[in-house]
Structures are given as structure tokens and as C-alpha cells.
Image (cartoon, rainbow, N blue to C red; front, side, top):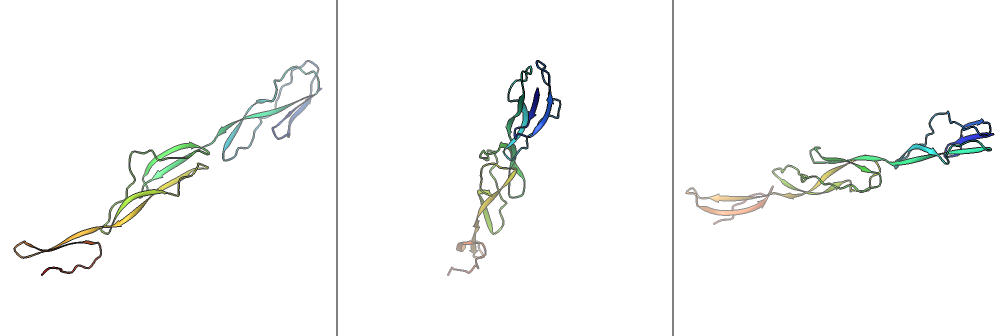
Amino acid sequence: YKVTFLDEGGAELQSSSWDYGATPVYSGNTPTKSGDKRYTYTFNDWDKTIGPVTGDTTYTAKYQSVTNQYTVSFVDSNGQVLQASTYDYGTMPSYTGTVTPSKAKTAEFSYAFNTWSPALSTVIGDVTYTASFTSSVNTYTVRFLNEDGTELSKQTLPYGTEVTYQGT
């Protein structure tokens, strides 16, 4: 009798004749199935238990799917990795680090963490999210003092503003 082994797509992997009552053996390479971004596939078994031959029989490969995992990194403004974790395909990542992203203050600006760039979305591959910040212009207090140290005028001005004496 003819015993045929097929892959899941129907392509023949092995075909041979076996006597009635004999138990066929698959002697080819382990069946494979191409993965995709979501799953990796491994051969699991045949669609039915291999048993003694009683007539022409076909066995079809069955596969087990394993959800692929990808690395999601969250980095600070200076490129320092704050968190790197693996997530299953299709899940939504989240930043669970204990360090609040920060950006060094300059003479002109102070920065506050705003969001991640690009915007968080479900995992479909390795991705790096970079902290983005809002900026605010720093203000400075300017004091005009008399030679004896008494204050003549005091102003709080944004960085870059021209200073002029406002006193009497």
C-alpha cells in the first residue's frame, strides 16, 4: 500500500510502499514551516497516529506555533537605556522603569519629560522609544544694588531678555 507524508501545505515529503500490517516510518528531514513576524513554527506531529498499514494512507505534518518575542528599549535623551524588555508580538509595551527620563538643563531652557517617540504601539518587531521633552525658557532675577548694598530695583526676566534699569 502507498503511504504518503505531506507537509501542511500539501507538498509531498515522502511516499513509499508498505506491506499490509507493517508500521511505516518517516525517514525524511524534519518537516518545517516558515515563520512570520508573529509566529515561529516547529514540527509537532502528524495529523494522525502512525499505525499498521491497512490501505493507502496519507499523514500530514502539524506544527506548533510559538509567538515571537521582540526587544523593546526605552532610552533617555542622552541615549542611556532606561529599560530593555522582551514582549510578545502584538502586545502593548509600557515603561515600568524607576527612573524618570530627564534632559540636562541649559542656561536657556529647562526640560520636562513629555512622551515617548515614536508613540507607543503594539509590538511587531524590535523597537527603541526615545524620551521626548517639553522645554520652558528659564527666568532669572536681576537686582540693581546701590553701592551700600541696598536694592534699587529687582526684575524677574526670561533668558535672553535685554536688561534695563527700572528704578528711580
